[in-house]
Length: 74
Image (cartoon, rainbow, N blue to C red; front, side, top):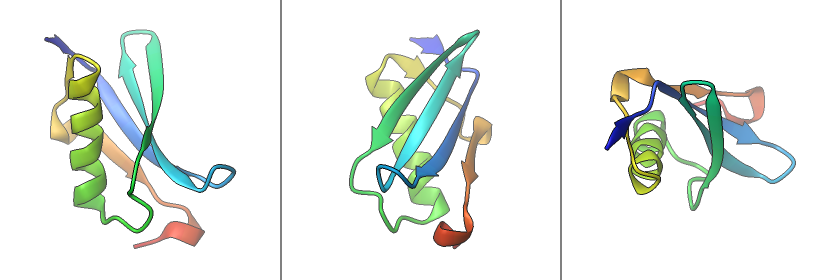
């Protein structure tokens, strides 16, 4: 399994859903986090790691950040 460099989880207000951006070198993949509308930071990070794993990448939890907007502050 390849190692992903980092991931960022952020709210997409247009689609009204959380999305994860997984970076592997110069490549960035954007995937939705299904069913995570009111999730806490730990759940969002866990889901991001699961999505990366589904895509064939290992992702260190320390390299996952969650970007909160004012409409989705914890």
